[in-house]
Length: 281
Image (cartoon, rainbow, N blue to C red; front, side):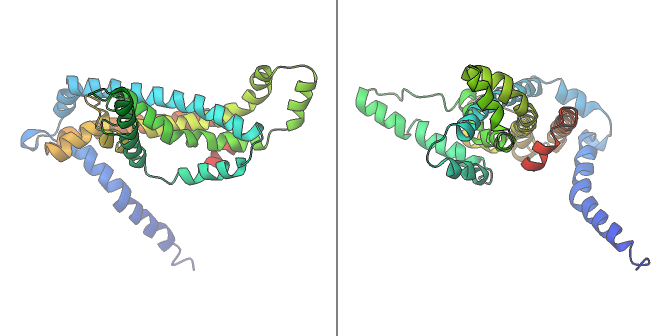
């Protein structure tokens, strides 16, 4: 058994290197390879100093931050309603949240286009009722359409750990606070919110990481002028065949993602949010 034990280490390690580490190594190597095969920092200096990259970086951070903030607020409110406001079908709604996580993000973009697009349902109704010749609803093809679509899709990623945290909250604390005359907002602030902080950190960090790398929603909505880092990678590598520039942006995007994930793990470990992570994973 000892003679063959190395197989259980070498084989998985080989698979991991071939499938995961080699593509990353190829991207990293290509990002340093300029014209004529010269290796150096010139591709980074050229790409990182361009207005295209700076604009895409700021836009990516802005969209990811606003989307995450929206997910936190909406997810917290919806989780409160599902957990503490009795209504028929609460269990069905809670179960659907887990199912929603399996949907691809571009379905939300298609749904938004179908509902709010220039030829969408709501524009058709509004134009029919008002007699307008131009669609009155035009937010979809802007950054706000992207943000709203991302909030719609990623809010369940916040709700799931929150629902798990609320299910383990001692309801006797809420009953005691209510019997002592505490108003609902005070109960939420002093009893429920402290228990929700680890779950909010877990869900919010994950939303920030995912929205930072979101590609499907931005691509399918086709918002004019909304160029994010993943869109720059796609444009440079796939449309312009400038693989070096695409790899430079990809390396930056990977570094941001790894940094966010490290921060996510640090915050969870410092706030005792391991339980929320386990439930979310």
